[in-house]
Image 1 (cartoon, rainbow, N blue to C red):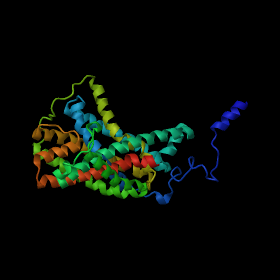
Image 2: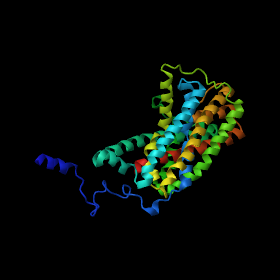
Image 3: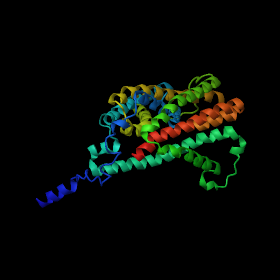
Length: 356
């Protein structure tokens, strides 16, 4: 029986709450959020998706699926909307545990994997968050690069490159990445109970900027026409698998926010504020940016004869073809909005989960 006692001692968790010395087992972030810090209200959970959905990654995903999915445009829209409804259901479902118990992902991971294996799951999330912080920072810096082009014209784009071709980048892009990182970095020190104010402001700015870009593209190209974007990638698998690939693409853009729901919902003033309100914000915002990206790319294809999947390429194409005070001013504000908005999404999806 000695081996059973040793095994029991190995898996037992020592109760040291009185001494509070083991901060890996119990600390302020792992314990339930105290009532005074439950500051997120109903409208915060509606607006958080308007600030998160209108971002570079969401736009690029919708725009590129017309070419890469192998489906007709009608089925791309149908598969995309179905995927959005499915991901909404999973998101709301995962938020409930955080709003009921007011604990975050690290504490909830222990209920499934145990205390020790829970550390590994937190480490995996931290590792993925580090990668995506870099990716999203790069996306945001490319939008800020367009903003600088609008401001300084060729004086910015003609910056001397001191890097060799093997670097696969330029001095200009390294500089704009560094500038964007420095501007974004202070937001990482803002606690989730306060960052909601930044999210609220962003939730009003981003839809307006996206709508303005959408209107310009539709007017300039006289609509999407026959939804042509050049030669499409041929389908090599069954239609069911093509629908699943669209589902995978949509879920990929929102999977960090699904996993990290408890880290946000734990600050809810009332548990019910994270259910219906999130669905109200999630569905229209996701569907809008998904369709806006597709229609805009198809419309500009009619005008310029090329499809621009990445939004920063689309910005630069507009400047190349419409260079003038009006285009520079419009793209300046829209690209700046996406640069700032991308920072908010980065905080919501990656920085907060890494810290907690």
